Length: 166
Image (tube, rainbow, N blue to C red; front, side, top):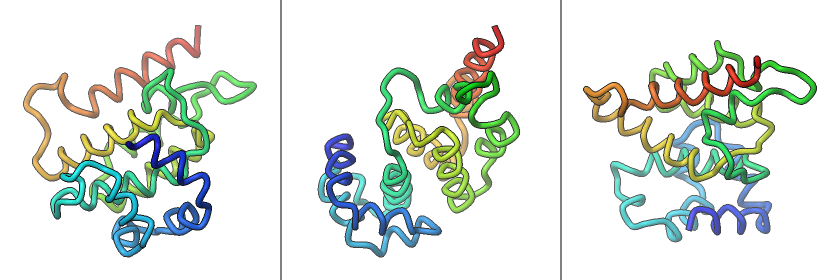
């Protein structure tokens, strides 16, 4: 569903542009393209407690130009820039993304990370990461460290940066 909606978005540049212009997740909620998105997603994505998560996902996917399946979202942020060994998203920006204080800040930082990753992103991994972050924001982090998004992202990001330096 998610991939087919994203592929259709490429055919409808007006919808893509409207979603890309959103400055905050709430801006997405007020667009017709978002309601088309909800119509194609699972029913629970349209529930009031999930609307903000769904809005962030729809807007974030509008910035993705090329779907990449080979790595997770966090790994893709650590992939080396073309012609260099440094990560596409610096360690500082990566840490700032992880430490976002609220959905608006997270939204801005996710969009920035997508652009820095050359808009080549694993769409499913990105959507899962957004849902996980929003759940942690609403309900608190899991008591088990291995189930926390920051731990998963950190592991994936730093494993890739180690590979970059070999």
